[in-house]
Structures are given as structure tokens and as C-alpha cells.
Length: 244
Length: 300
Image (cartoon, rainbow over all chains, first blue to last red; front, side):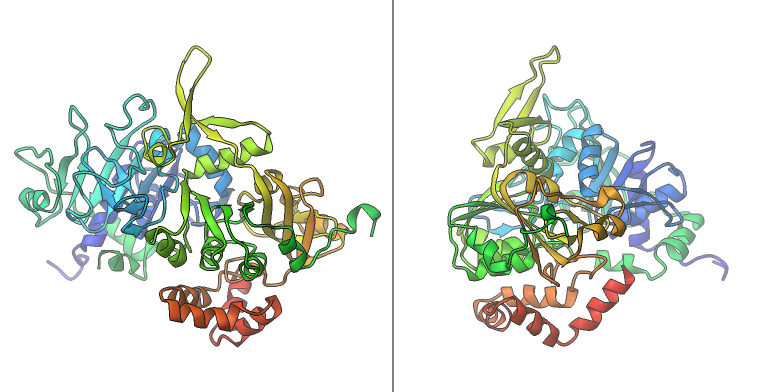
């Protein structure tokens, strides 16, 4: 390695690039990322292969790639946009199952939960109206579970009969990228991050994954992508804290 | 001042007297943003019980739960935003002390809209396939009467006895405007209620409203509002930009105190047991806080 080459990509940077891929091909829609790494991913997508994406400032303003205000998106308009389908959200999950059912509401018996979490928020409406992806910063059998305690976001099995606008696109974790590209929409290992084996991913997953004989490795960031992340999108390096 | 714009100015206690045990109260704002906290603090002191609270929930829900005023919460979430989980709501749910009607955010919006339109329900796609239907066994679905024959969730109207919202400015007659980036659903809360009360940072002469903001920021009018209260700092510790941002240091203090019974008793004695003036005075004495607020207001 010469002194002119950038420091190799960190895991957080790899995940930013993997998250960005979720919005590929979406067109002129609102990208709604929850969490810093998905936010950097959406902004990276817009700076590279998806300049048409809309992104908010985290409050009510739509901002361009140069952080110029280009429009207004208060909560009432987000809810209206949800029903038009012109949105792709990357949410988190306290629990996620093999069909992409997600729980962010409560752990345990809903009537008297062991742990009360946020509530279902917009997950039920998001998942039956527009594409949804998930970001799991810690791949573990406590998150990727056989059965979620409460279906907030609707997965493929539960969407049956209501699936006209339903799509769970990608699941990005700190170990791998997964999708639902199987005949019955069970979760599939799409790629493993460098240095991680398919067996390790399976061992950290609470249900059986669809795993091909030859699982590709998640693409590492290009020099151009690294430069954008490090110099333009997150010069303070806050991304690293989301994986600690 | 014209005759039509006078006579609706109230004190905080006048609003509290409008609210009786068992009522359904809608609270505007969103999470820890532009909540009518001065009115909520007064309700929490009033010894009310058995309220049903409809809210895109934040510390408004938490404070009323801590005061033992709440029987049921109707919401899609309760959060302090920068602190994801509301500690009082979390504790009360885990102890089985409150009932919950858990709805998708879009269903909340639709339920309020149905109430404003005097409709029993509105159809929505949100909720289909999810456990919102399981945990709300009273929810029904409807079939489209048209050729598509599709199934939808029939969101029941969320009719309110009383709505409480906080705006930046209002006139004495009940016209009000917001100066920040988001109206949230405050106008819907007011229209969905039998009686609606607006607290505001400042009551101004009617003529100053239209000169302060573009017309579309004049969110509520006299037909939607039954009383106006001037409560400077009345959204504290939630955000009320551009007048002030969220008081993050104080919110962290609130969340820390809420984690235990003794610490909460101390917090309540220091900040909540007195009236609104003594709350604001105690907040001014909270060391790191004033500078934060000035910075946030300046930055906004």
C-alpha cells in the first residue's frame, strides 16, 4: 500500500455503502432512514447513483445534496406521502423474523410487556404502502428471531392478501446483507461482510436462513465513496459510534 | 381591539376547571415537540383521574401518567425523541397500570380526521396484516363497495372532549399561528374536540398575526378554539422553535429522575408541586439550562 491510498474502510463505512444500495432504482421518492448509518447511506446514494432521491433535514424541510432547502415535508405530508407509495423507509427493529415481520412496540406479552418500547409508530402503514428495508446494527439471535412478539411492520407471510404495495427490500446488519429473494420470501443471505462466514451469520440468527453454496462478499467501498463519507457526509466520524 | 377578538383569554386554572375525571383529552405537538406542557403540568397537579389521553406522545403522556391521571393512552408511540423511550410510560406499561390503544400513526391521523368530519370511521390500508388488529380487538375492517372489493381497516373516529395545543402566537379571540417548521396535527386536534384550548408563548393583537407569518401558518381560528392562555415557556422542556429549542439538559434531568420513585419525588417537589411561575423559576435555577435555551433559540 502506498501513502496515497486511503485507510481501508471501517465496518461502519462498509455498512453505509450497503445501506445506500437499498434505494437503488427507486426514482423520485422520499428516502426515510432511521439511524445515522442509514442516513449516511441515503445521502451517499443521492450523491452517487440516485440523485433524484428526496431527503429531509430530520425535521420538516426537504434539503438538496448541498443542504439547500428545496421543499417542505411536515409530518402530515409524510403520512400523505406514505399512502401514495412514493417513499422507501429504512427502519430499525427490536425483533425481525424470517418473513420480515418487525417489532418495535414491546417485548413479551403486549398486555403487560417485559419491555415497553416505542410503539408501532408508522410501521404498519409503511409496510403495506411502500418499500421498507431494515438496519440491524447488532446481528444477534435476540433480534433475528423465530417469532416476533408483536407484528409492527408487516412481513411477507402476514401481508398475504394485502400485498399490492408490499416490499421488504433489504436487511443490512453489521455482519451481512440479507433479502427475501426466495420462492416463498424467506430471508436469504445475500452477502457476508469481509471476514465473516455464512456459518457465523447463521449461528447469530434465530431461524434458518436460505444460504446458497457460494455467498458473495459485500462490496467494499470505493475510494470515491470513502471520500464522500469521510470528507463530505460525516467529517466528524460519528458513524463509528453506531456500531459500538 | 375588535369585539370579535376579545373575551377568550383565560388563565391556566380556567382551562384545568374545564377538565373532569373520565374525559378524553387530545394533546397537540409530536413527541417532545411543541407540547402544551404548562397546561399539562397544571392538569398533573389537579388530582384528575381516569383520563383517556390521545397524543402523538411525549412527556405530556409521561407527566400525566406519573400524576396518576391516566386510565388509557391512545397513541402510535410515546417518545422523548432525543431519548427514545419515555420512562413513565415505559414503567406504567410494564407494571400493567395503564390501558393502551395502540394505533399506527396514519390511523391516528385518520381517526382525528374522521372525528372532525363527524364520520364514524375512515378506511385506511395501515394496520392490515399487523398485530394492531390483534391488540385492538374492537377494530373492524370494511370492504370497498366498488369493483375492487378491497379490504381496509375502519379507523374509528377519535372524538375528543377537550383538545390542548401550544402555539407560538395567538390573539385574544382564539386565532393562532405557529412559527416553526411543522404544524403537527394541532388543527385536527382542535377540530376533533368539543372544546379546544390554545396556550401560546405570547398573545398579540390580531393585526400582528398576519404580519408575523404567511397566511398558511395561521393554523387555528376562532371557530376551532374556545380559550387562549398566555404561557411564556409553556412548551418547556419540549421544543418550541424559533422561540426556543428543546431543553436537552433539562429533559435528560427529567428522564433520569423518572427512573426511580425517590428521585421522581425530589424532581416533583423541586419543579412540579408549585404553580407555573414557580416551575419557570426553578427551571431558571437549573444550572446549565439557560444558556442552552438561548443558544437553541438563536440557532433556530
